[in-house]
Length: 556
Image (cartoon, rainbow, N blue to C red):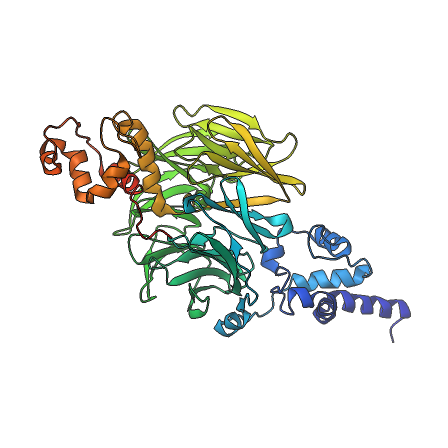
């Protein structure tokens, strides 16, 4: 027979330790928003992997007090024992079932579509802005907000088709929203689907038919119809995927694993996969702007690796002190060379690298650790955040730096540019924050919008690698061509607009590389143009830039 005190103690231990008690309390108060399997419905997932950054004390505070500026209410009526049992249940792994059946049933189309008049002047200046505090997505063109709609928990890059008509917005908890623009005149939110429980990133096939979703939970690639969002195929993965990125020159998408030294190549026509062995796991990577190389890194090995994509051969590696955040890398061209810069996790510097004749250039101190580096041909600077109230401006000529305070005492994060590059969008990350627009030449504020925790901005041009050769071409034009040519008006030589609309690509290349022999074929009586000894990347860049002035007879 147990003494009364011992019986009480056993009952309390049973209450604290019993998963059944925690599950029952969770289902009573939490499951209607967070799902019985903790995978989230109208509220985020509450799984061990998504809650690992929170202590039990922090979770207790959230449950008791709620979260301001969200739909999370206060449960101050719960006893301490009940809250502890809920947290214990949240820390437990439970079987999760999320297959094509569940994906299909999650498809939610907007049956009450109200099209918003947009009257877009130039699709290249369209920028999607995430206002996390109010769970809003803004659609902007230059200084104007054209539309806004509700969407929460956005994660990673927004993807879009290159005709500027279809935009896809991913969330951390696996939802993908779909926004459509018709003929640059009107736009509307089509609907959403939940592809998985924990999403890594999304990609689009070259032909625009497939939306490819990389998932950490479950470990799959989900293939959706890009026009209807209907699930087409589920591919099981044996490992934790890092990310997947499409190639724009061929029908392939490349993915890697955090925990396995393997590179996957997805054929985006027949959806088959070929695997290639790597030297080490690749946790973070990007594909270079010309679709030739994979640049990757891993936390364990602390080195940068470069694989040539045609034969998947390792062509360069270099040791470093810490893991770079390659997804946030910035690219530019200067004096015949191509460069990229990347921040480093937990380190107060960015590193500068030369591409194609691969080499490390230098580290540039930024004061404290940052997360994003951005640039554009229309600015002389790399724009870097460092967790403070200032943007760090690093000159692309000599890598000198200066600090420009945006809003004193409030954290600045993440720069984005419009397509033309004359406007920089700067986020003041605060509940009472701002989206601030800066003139990139005068470095002066143009306009500001109140915003609650504005985070990512995604411009139509600057987030798509297929546009990067043209951006490099703009920099080459300023260095090599500006003395004789103008983009849209005749100068000493014909305008790029005239060239784009009256010459074939082969004629353009011949006139650049061998004008002494090509001028007669173009109808000129004499040649006054010097030959340029461009490499393959320079010629592709300047030709892409010239072609960007080609008039579209079927303009949307």
